[in-house]
Length: 362
Image (cartoon, rainbow, N blue to C red; front, side, top):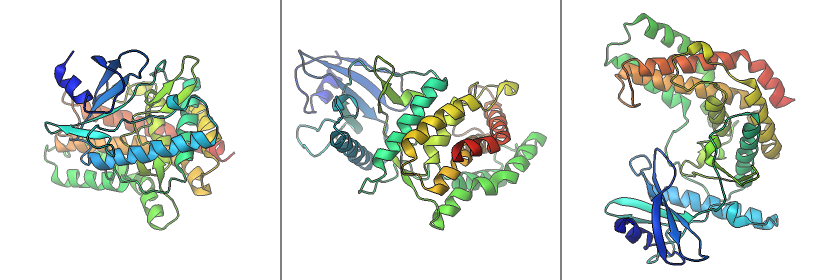
């Protein structure tokens, strides 16, 4: 057993003797370990928080504590059973019971109880999409009356106006000399046609016509825990929980789930916005979120399905124009291929806009 990790785990108020620590999962952002203890005491999840991405760890953990405490109270009020399996529980550090993280050699660590007999899946089919819609809608619904204000763990994470201005700056600077390419000009022209429509959410928010809610902001199917019967236990990976528009969770899920190929697939002819996934996810989402959605939020759900492939195309294209300084690339045209892929997904979703509107408002 890694004695350094055992020392870090020992700083938290764990029950039982620590018997072993092993890597858990394959997350790309944080380093995660399972801490096994003796006897009938709980096992734990020890995690190093990536503070190069999440700059304000104190704010991040405060967000998570407020959210999980509120959800726990809601479950208790509803008379739910097995609450320990339906919401994450973070462990305080021994020398300061008010804190749920510690700093060791400049690295930030936290610990939560491990939820036994729970599973994550990467399957994206209509059934799992329905379950995902229901879970993320319910997550937002339980937090709709959270009295405390949360901070933004990644400021302007889903701000389309900001992403568009970043692209304009990249085009003006043209550091890699790629704006002379005919395809770059064609892409910029296409994106410009739709930019005003895709930036309308921030404008509506400033006018007081569109609210921000507490959203997960990383709504992937593998960010849910299931029990052995396939029923959702809870939503996990809460680092990005913060105020946003409801279609952040709605559109972000569909951007990856409704595309039958990966976002960097060069097989553009296979890119297609899957309406079976849209219908299933929307059905689950509205079943649990309809109770708190305002008419304008419900009306803008199809906009969310369009926004996220558009936003990602803008981000990939800006990075290509900047000379590939943000996203990791495997070959010189990688970001351009990603841009083509996301534009194709946006175009496909646009073809289904009327049908999506009918489903959401019907």
